[in-house]
Image (cartoon, rainbow, N blue to C red; front, side, top):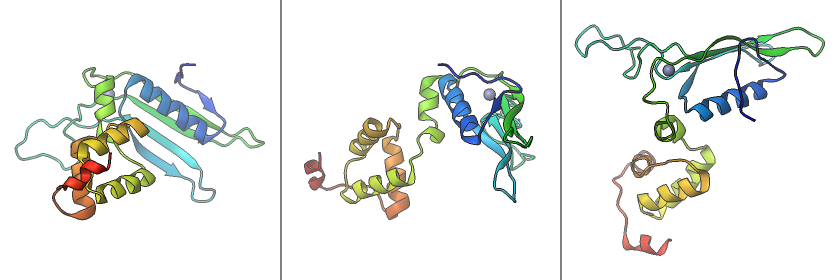
Length: 185
Ligand SMILES: [Zn+2]
């Protein structure tokens, strides 16, 4: 069933809300940032969460002086957002409610499968996956081999460049591989 989002939509728990928005964003190839998170200090529950489009924010007008540090390169002022508030009603009737919603983007060129799949946000690996890839790096496996492995096993577009960058981060050296690599496949 295709997930929908609408104003005043209610969820019984936070996980349900998260899986619904993530599925919706993914199905439509939207890159959204969790831009606001407000957690109740007493019970640790999420009180308010806001997702905004990755192009939300002020557009950079010029590269000259006067640029503010919070201005983002991609930003074009897109107002697409999902705002969720926790409504405490007691007696097991507590709900997570979408209280504000704007499903309109002011851009189209980056709402497609390719842009979505290759956006850095969707190329991130989990801790376990990173550990696995780091082990592969120790064997000096070729970047293309690692890249294919991640794509096949996890469906993530972890590019050869990503492999190179990870190697630099972990081992602080240039990517080199020896002939032994050929035996690893
Ligand atoms: Zn947008």
